[in-house]
Amino acid sequence: MAGVELGDAYPEIDDHRQLLETALKCQRCRLRGTCKQVVFADGSPVSRIMFIGEGPGKDEDIQGRPFVGRAGQLLDRILEAASFNRQEVYITNVVKCRPPDNRLPNPDEINLCRGYLEAQIRIIRPAIIVCLGSLASQVVIDPKARITKIRGQWFQRQGIKIMATFHPAALLRNEGYKRPVWEDFKKIRDEYHRL
Ligand code: SF4
Image (tube, rainbow, N blue to C red; front, side, top):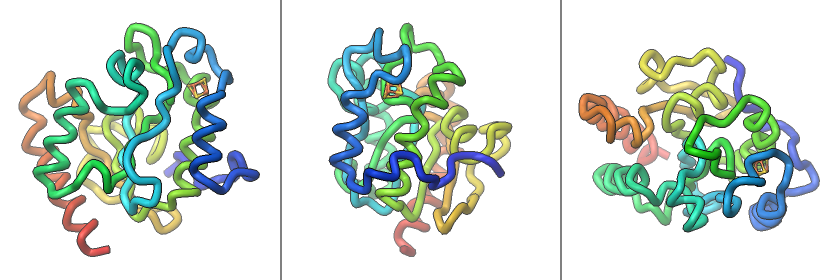
């Protein structure tokens, strides 16, 4: 299993605020040239659970917070149904700047941005990571991961339990994903309550 390691990206930074301030000034890849702002994270930086999506969309780019558009509103409803409060969880994306026209981020953009994700994981040290969708699963769990094959299973790396499930945007396109996502969230909730 090869994916994100806790790694030593930004070793000089051991504080969430400092990492945020560094990211907000970032110009490392071309995405910063077309987005309105860097969308770093939302929720609690001392949370035991981290949700990772793909990248900001149009609404997120405008508001500066991840998961605030239609997919984000659906995520809020799923979190609420699973007894999570959005303020108690930590939510971020693989890339922190909106890819133009909501295209997938390119591999070089992912590689240039992944240090922030590695540092977020190192600093926050969540007990559980939930990968929302294929891209996050491939970056965090395994570059060859297929979401339909690996969703709902627990992986473990450096003491962190990791599960992938469908991205809320996929649920908006395919109602058939609702039941598996709910099954996954029940496992995630049960594991969180065991902590
Ligand atoms: S996507 Fe990441 S690497 Fe690229 S400019 Fe934004 S913060 Fe920097």
